Length: 170
Image (cartoon, rainbow, N blue to C red; front, side, top):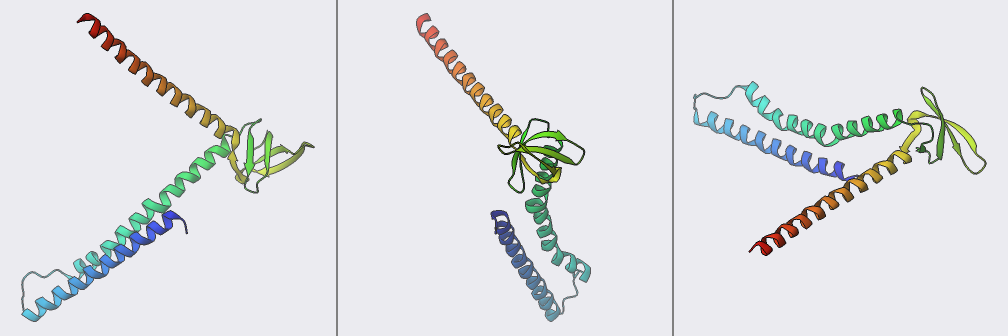
């Protein structure tokens, strides 16, 4: 079981326990009011039913937020990656084949793989990752980090220069 599934199960167990205790409190309160003969404004059975369903509605909302929505986001990113495959990209298929794209059609890709330059035609949905795009993204992230560090170093140097200037002015 993965981490998200375990987390969802814990949340669902908590919410179901809360729902059971809320239902028990409602029943106990109704029984107490009935025993006391109170005719004060009692909640209708429809209201009680809605209050009983509220924890389950919250559980479904959490299910959507924790499991379904992130999965849809990952699927959209994967689809975008498959649509952006270009000739010359190195890709890995779901079956573990690694090759260089030599031709892209509407729903298939021709890969050149192996020392003998074997050509294999695979469906686009079978492409698991685009190694070239991943390497480019990692390189861009390194460059951004280095630029940020240079900016921090420059700012620190500027602060040091301004402190030296203040000291020399005094």
